Image 1 (cartoon, rainbow, N blue to C red):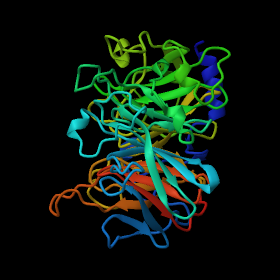
Image 2 (cartoon, rainbow, N blue to C red; image 1 turned 120 degrees about the vertical axis):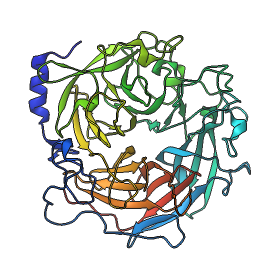
Image 3 (cartoon, rainbow, N blue to C red; image 1 turned 180 degrees about the horizontal axis):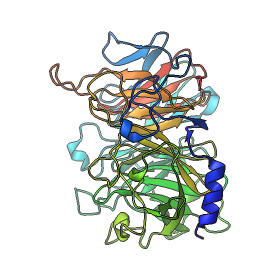
Length: 482
């Protein structure tokens, strides 16, 4: 059913233009503690600061050259590709990406960690080991590992799934499993693969037997998956696609009437179960929006209709190419997602010449499933010099913080940060990657990924993707001022 213009006008009034993050007026700026102007043309121009500072103060350089943190904070390396070992004795795989935490038995914390390894596994120094019974395609090097952090501080790590490709952001489920997403469209016979890829798989961190004989959830489509969240009330799945030429789509999967989610239910779905749909947005005047980069002001609200994907398995044509540009709404670099506040936070990392709208260095949208609206909550102006400290750009993985607002992982050029954003949009640094993979004259820093809090909110876990390092950050966390 389409959303009528009258419904949209009513919903927009309820949602409220000018909302930032969790409901306060403001926009996310590139400069710490700043509020951006409400128009992207400001390109990060500082507006007046609200009284008081937010965050935890300046970052202090790490003498070990790994992670700069504010005073009072410390980190611990949990896994390190090529250095730490799995239970099997093999090396921790590389290319850490999306991660989630779960309560484990006897006071343990379980983390499922994606490994974004693409192409033939023979070309990768540390692929996910081909553990018997857990392999989808023996030619692929990606997959997931499960990390157990015990109360005494000891660590164990084992394979959750192997033989998948380019496992990116993914997402957790309300029934405490992990959905790992393949960000690729490789088919059998291409790029060394022996099976089709571009699917979502379910991994159960608490039941190793449930992960035997991996099966793709074909009902969720085959495309360059980035992230997924589940609406715990309605059962809908929302999925992002990180693709270009043309830009990717925001998808929704609607289950059949009577379907009830739970452990193992998704993997037993028929390939054509439910309906996979793509988002089509329009403004309050009913005008179609071809690309989310058209939005230039915080608080922009779009209504959303959902259009069925003709061939979700993309047998001959990629799903995003099955529509004309007039049929659906595209977006450049659709990245991380997180369910919170009754809806889905959705990241667009940046938009440049590949998009028809105004260039930006990051958007975070909030989809309200009840009102069927997308509201622009966070807008980053173009960062003129990513090599300089003090600016944030190119959001990727995100999480909703138990201390208010969002925690965001950077994936751009130059310096890489974890940073927070308050409900009013003020930003503050949490960590800086100091592991230089380049040279002194031409430094290079890997992106942060997998940002997520422990179930009790005391530990912030995050990854440095290359070479593949999982970190646990602790310190004097506090609720941030709006």
